[in-house]
Length: 208
Image 1 (cartoon, rainbow, N blue to C red):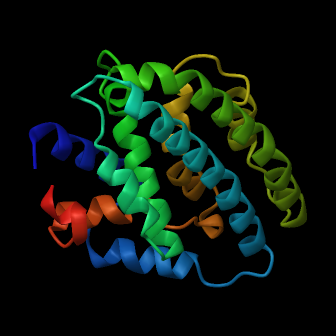
Image 2 (image 1 turned 60 degrees about the vertical axis):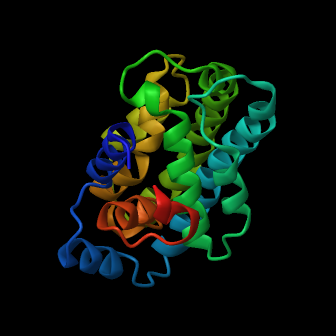
């Protein structure tokens, strides 16, 4: 595993907001226990969140063959994604590929050719995500008799954010949502990153 790949993994783990131990696993399992009010909202948020991952990855997949950029992600990782059957495994892989595509942005480095082409559409998709996710969150807060003004203010601001920083807001959203509303725990988007750090990833990812 190269230094840049390990740096990306460690950054994603830090974004997860917890370490690799059993405490994190136990907290996630507890938070995902079925809650008839919270669970449908969490699933709705996941669907909207996953739409951005899917749109960006498909855009990158289509553009990649036309680019002459040795630094871009290899197409084999997109092909591996197509063979992933488990829903959480699929989207944790998609999340990692999404982070890889945006790794220069995350590291505050000059974007490669792929990111430069993908970024405008990606930012539009992210803004639409925040626009669409606000109503179910507001409805949930009303029905559960809670107030989270900071969360709603941030989501509203991100829905209109034009700067590249909106990408990081999107990447960090599962953690920030959990911090404000633990019962709306989303799927573990950093599952693959954790497996890579622990050295237990399989298939093509095990060769990194």
